[in-house]
Length: 293
Image 1: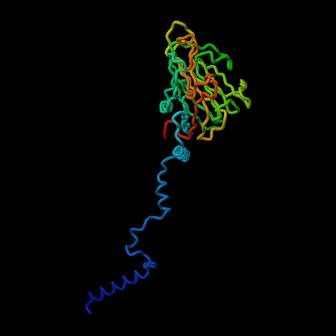
Image 2: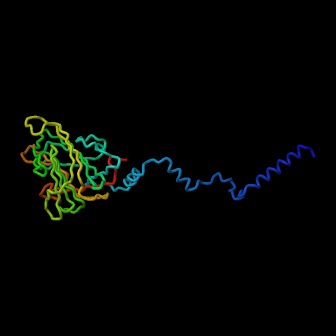
Image 3: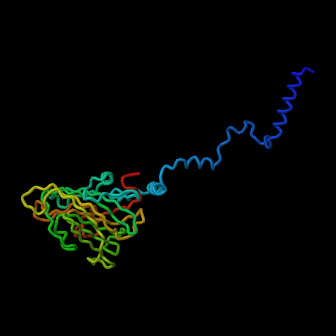
């Protein structure tokens, strides 16, 4: 036999021996396994790389995705995220405030020449807190009360009621906070008895004022002022949670000699004005992140 033929036969025999050394080769699919899908573990590993959000941010995003929308007559109070901090300098120019909707105020007696733009958010903490920023257009700023819990309602300023549910009555989860244009605060709650105002309540209000004018100076022309504040809510929010609310801006320089209000109280019409729970609107403490994702 020629030497070349012998060499070919030896090479073929060696190749067959190598193949038979692999075990399980007969279990492979006919196409060699090239079309087999990756395992579930491999797919999960791919999904996790890279991480798009931190765990805290992802939790907030998941919660927001399941949040109910506010009704047409409700005001939604968005939640400040764990990474969102406000400047708290009395100005309402923070991008977070700019991204939020304003409270829909209406003129009580249609005589006020003032304007108001308020936005609200809340933040989960050991005690949940509400944050707000209101810009008031006012050509004659009047605010003289400097004693806490005194007659703050007689000055230019803002006030609000909050209640932790939708029962139209004053009660244990109802609080009222007033702030005048120079930052004096009055805060009350109502215990468990209808109509009982308690000035011993402390909402731990922090308020900053940005003044565009000179208060209590007749004859000069002011532009307005803004208030940025935070305060204890007075109940555990556990969003999404609906509760009654009433917001108002007091105006001492109206055109008919009476004190007028710009107010959010869409169910108005009952005597008692902003102090009457039957006139209050509904606020939705949302799990939606303030200012979007």
